[in-house]
Length: 382
DNA sequence: ATGATTTGACCTGC
DNA sequence: GCAGGTCAAATCAT
Image (cartoon, helix red, strand yellow):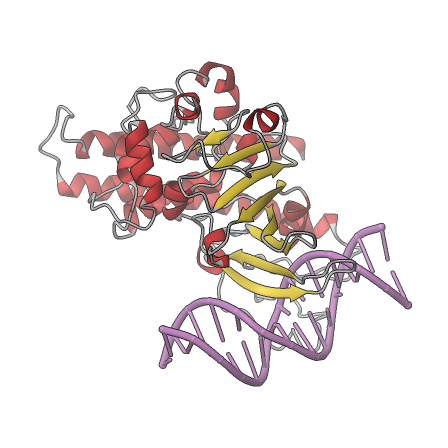
C-alpha cells in the first residue's frame, strides 16, 4: 500500500518535472532573446500539448489517489458514496455512473451540478482540505466617502450568503471566489462590520486563491513583510490619526498595510506564514530575500496548473505583466518596477496594460519555485 | 439573457 | 439545540 502511494507520488513528481522542462523548452522557443528566435509554430504547439498532457496526467493521478482514499476514510459519514469530481461544494452531487445516489438532501439533491471543477478534488478531500485551509483576518478601516466596494482586494468575489451573528450588530457577509466553479478556486472570505466602528470591517479570508486572477497583482492586499508596508505616495498619511506609526510597527506578528489611497488601512492577524496568503507571490525584496528564501519555495500545485495553463490557453488578458516581470535568475532578482512605478501601479489599479503574453520569465520562475516579489518593501516604507 | 445578490432553508459541529 | 456556514430559488441589475 505504502509502496503504491510512493509510486504514485514519484509518478506525479515526474509529470510535474516534465511539465517544467517542457515549459522551459517552450520558453526557449518563444523568447525573443533566446538563441533560436525562429520559433517553429508546430514545435510550440507540440510542446504546449505535451505540457497540457503532463498536467492532465498529474491531475488524473491526484484524482485516482483521492478517490481511493476517500471512500475508505469516510465510510461512517452520512455523505459517503459521494466520491466524485465535484466542484467542491459540500452539497454538490455529480455522480460517476457507477455510484449510487444515496442520502441526498431532498431539496438540494434535485439539482445536479453540471460543472466539474478543474480542481478535481474528491468530495471528502475537499472537506478535509477546507479544514486545513489557511485562515487569516484583516481589519480594514474605511475613511469617509469611501464606498464599501473599496474593500475590494484585487480578487473577484461573489456573495453567497449573509447571516446575523450572535452578539454582532451587523450581519456577516459570505463571499466566495467568482472563479470557484470555473477554476475550482476555493478561496472564501467573510466580511463583518465592526460593532464599535461601522467604518471598520473585519475580513476573514479562508483558503488561498488557486484561480488565475491578474487583478490581484495590482491591488494585492497583503504583501508579506514583517513590518508595516506603505505603498504609494501617501505613505505618511495613511494611518489613523490617533495612532502613531511606530506603535504599529512594533506589533508583530500583526502586519499593517496601507495603500496609496488614504481610504484603506489593513491589519493582518492570525498569519503564521505569509506564504499562506501568497503561495506563489511572496513579496520578498532583495534586501530581505535571503531570510525568506525558504518560505518562498512553497508553491501551490494548483497555482502552477492554473497559471500555466491559463497562460498558454487563455487569451492574454493580463493587466499587470510589467508588474510581474522577474529576471530569469529567480529569487530576489532585479526589480523592473521602481517604487514610483509601483505607486503608479497601485494608484491605477484598474488600468490595463497591453502586454501581449504573460512574461515567460515570470512563468519560468514560478516553475522553478523561486518566487520573489519585485517590490523593495523596506525602501517603500522609509 | 445573463450574471450577481438576497434570503429562507438546510446542514454540520459543538 | 444552537450558531455558524452554505445552498439555491427568487429577485434584481445590467
